[in-house]
Amino acid sequence: MGGPRRRARHFISQAVNMAEWVGKQASGTGATARGIELRDIVDVWYRRRWTIMALIVLTIMGVEIANYVIYPIFESRVKILIEGQSGLDVPFSRENLVFKKTEITQTQCEILICQPNLAQVVTNLKLDERADPSGSLRDTIHAGWRRVVRFYKDTKEGAKRFVVESVFHGTYKSPRLPTGFDRAVGYLQDDAVVRVEPMTNTDFVILTVRDRDPELAAVVANTLADVFVKSELAARVARAQDVRESVDRQLEVRGPELHEAREAVARFKREHGIVAIDRQIDAVLEKLSLLELSYWDLSQKEEVRALSAWDSVRRESSAIRDLSHREKTALIDKLSELAELETKYQPDHPRVVAARAAVAEVQDKLDEARDDKPQAEDPPAEDAESLRASLMEEITRVRAELSELSEMDTRYQDLVMDVENSSEVYKFLINKREDASIAQFTTQPQGRIVEPAIPSFKPVRPSKWMNRGLGLLASIAVAVGLCAALEYLDRTLRTPEAVSRLVGLRTLGSVPYVGR
Image (cartoon, rainbow, N blue to C red; front, side, top):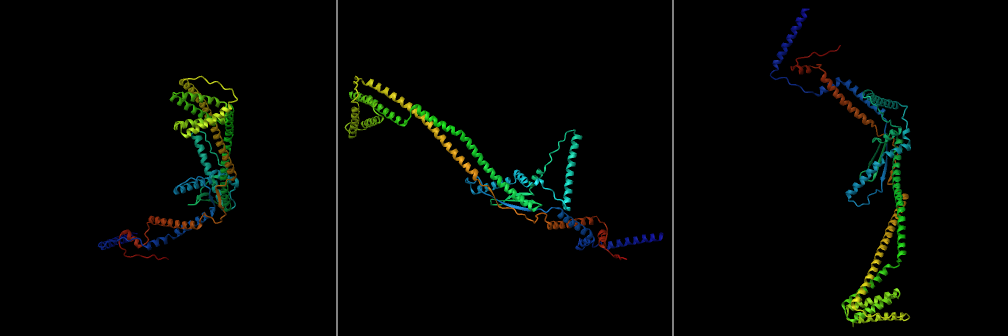
């Protein structure tokens, strides 16, 4: 036993000595570290080939299983034109107009996929009664997954109930379970199922619906577009009807007001005997002008001619009371014209002479009219002061009469104005009611289906070849990482170069492995 051990120790000592000698010989140049070469990489791949191939095969198999398990999703599209956009009749700049149109189109997109429209689609198509597919292995896998999800939710609810009731000694209120209708509406509210997008720089809107049934996807898309068009039309008709009803309610109030205003005008006419109040005011104004002119003339002249003129005027005024309105107006016109001409021209001016002749002619007619009436005795002569007082009293009376007529005319004009305003408002409401009635029965929908959806039997998801390519790339990346990790953890020395790199010495020789 001792011989082999001594020989082994001797062999080891000789090997150590040899290594020391080789180290001394190589000390001048030093050992250089060799980098990783392509041969090393190929060697690693070759040694790990079965692991890499198994990983790639398993990944491809997993991808194929996923492609089979995932339901194919089909897509259908509807193109809708949003026309007759309200609010664009206001003048905008080009930038604001584009922004306004974009804003309105976005609003219509949100209205298109709002919850009431989706609920109407579920009701029309009875999507809440849609049964889950069964019969194939894929359907069985999905059914099992649904049971797992349901079990997870039930377990979570049970844990919450246990914590609340057992730990906190409270009362746990279970959330309301969604009905089939709620689940169907929630399914359509998913962006991956129903999506709407406006086309850039156009008034078109694209409605996209995806489902595992291509025919159902097309039916849902067309139904949703039709519901949107009809609901939008119904809303516009309802707005027109609301306007018409509102106008009818206002007419019920304005009609009696207009009738009452007209009755007030007629009653005022009957009470005050108004036939031609403007003419009455004009006549009183002419009479007042004549009296004031006479008063001024009397105040400026103290001669007897003035007293005679006043006496003549007074007699003429008494004769005026007995004449008709036409004769009074003619006499007042002539006297006013004569007074005005006397203030402007000399007494011997032709126009003044002609005006006096016209007054004399009218006076002659008045005298002829008074021939059959008993003549009153001339009043005694009065001085200028008493005449001015009498004239002022007459002017005051005429002014009071004019003020009364003016006040009466103001009240009358107010009543007439009320009638006109009420009539204008009533006519405006009548026209508005007619417009609302026309709009109620002639309103066109704002949206119009230009291109309905048709079933497409080419699935948009999953993309099998893309999944396979991604799976292959992923498996190669994982294989590279796995090989790098295994090589890093593997401490086995397989080649003389590995031994040389490890000890930092040159290789003198190697014994090849010879298999049996």
